[in-house]
Amino acid sequence: MDHQTTPNLALPLIQGGQAQKHVTHNEALRVLDLVTHLGVEGVAAAPPPAEPGERWIVGAEPAGPWEGRAGEVAVREDGAWSFLRPRAGWIAWERGGGLRVFDGAAWTGAGSGERVDRLGVGTEADGANRLAVRGAATLLAAEEGDHRVVVNKDAPGDTASVVFQTGWSGRAEIGVAGTDDLALKVSADGAAWREALVADAATGRVRFPGGIEAVVPAEAGGGAPVGAPYVASRGEGLVTNGTGLLGTAHNFPGLAFDASLAPAGLPGAFVHRGHSALVLSGEAMPVRPDRVYRLEAAVLQDALPGDWSAHPHGERHRHYVGLAAYDTDGLPILATHHMRFRHGGADSLTTLAAPLAPGDASLRLADAAGWNESVAAAHARAITVFGYRNAGGALQDGYSRITRGGMFAPGGVDKAAGTVALAAPWPAEMGNPDDPAGVWPAGTAIANGRGGSTYKYAAFSAFVPPEAGRWYRGTGFVGGVDLSGRNEPANLPPGTAAVRLLILANHSNVPGGGGGWAATGPDHAVRLAGLSLAEVGGAAMRRRADGAVALKVPAPDFDAGTVPLVPAAPSVEAI
Figure (cartoon, rainbow, N blue to C red):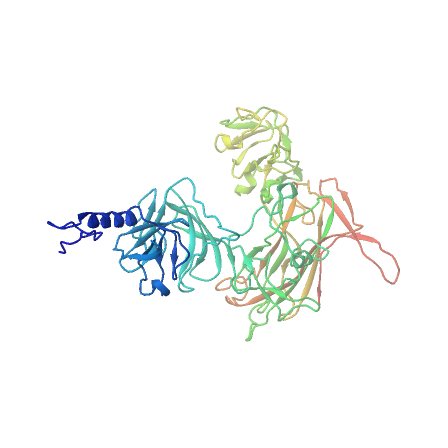
């Protein structure tokens, strides 16, 4: 240890027997004055004009009187420059703002420019979260003009994202995760994640893997936006993409689009391969029951190699194309919701002669003449109460979902007394929703329900192409509301507000075959094209005495120059 100076600031020490002790003492005071609460004007590489007592940090590569003094503190004294060599840990306040710290080799800004392994603001940082902030808000502001936050990753397969959590469980993430495409993901539990939005980095195209809801205002019906090709794909009818104009199988789930084989003038066809399958169009089409509609479809059964002569129809199968009906609430209308049993030609529709309450063992009818007295099938022993209201509260005419099969035993109807002995007490779920006790009053419309075909096979019904490898066009008509209870094929069921196109393809192609039909395997194709449902202008309707509706449609006669009305009837032609 040098006993001539102090160990930290190198202040001169007064020695024993030293003469002129005041010189040493004053020198120590001078140094203390220079380094205590050290404040500098700034950092410079060459001596600037300076007032006495000003202190400067000598910058890199100094020149002139400062040459060789880099990093030292220069002090202007008595018209000249003197220098102090700093030691590690010295702190200097700079007039321009901020603090500088000498680390033994250079001066650096305190808290800036220096590597900090962890920083916690209001909370503890850790190895995983090296920067942690806990507070009500975090502000990142531009010093002047723009301000950008950059989240960088090393490679496309890495992740750069921002995660939003609830209770430390992830709920949303936005960023580039495992790819360079921007993605927004969401999670309900922090474990299972779903992509809501993906923007392709190469094309900028945006897709919504989870779908879009309510883009159109609710007062306009809601739903997703559509483009011009989608609208054009309906042509003059109601079936979206019925001709394949979109170049995809949109609206026909389970079918595949094929542009290689189609009737003349059409862009392609929809293909079903294999065994019997039921296909419903993805979109429901609103219809007016007081209108008549034409349904058209073209069918081609692929020819197969080999000898199929052992089967009456060769390799060809039965096909159906028609409509499925839906009510105002979007619920499917089944035959059991409107069909009624008839006995000896008498309709079973009647009214209650006495109130009917949940738990009752029997019911009394005003007229039981048309009720089933011998058919054992459960659907022929159904009871339907015509007191059903839709979600909007409207009472439905001729249509009811208050129905159930097997309600009475064969022989349980006493027509003379007008009573029906129930197989089980009247169920509460079939009670009157308008009455707190569920009681149906006398005079309520009621019928012996029955089952039947739910669908309207207007274009093709059990159609077997006469020749494989050839197109056939089927045309049929449907319209008016059927109140007969018979399930009139050309009428819409009561309660109908919309329909879906229905396709029952390769219906007789079952594994192993049967009933004379060939088993043509899981790859045998049937093709459908030109699917159309459109209103028939100039059609006429008249209700028949039994409640069904007779239809007539225009049939232009070119030679006669007339357009007579003829009874609507289905037809099939080869094209």
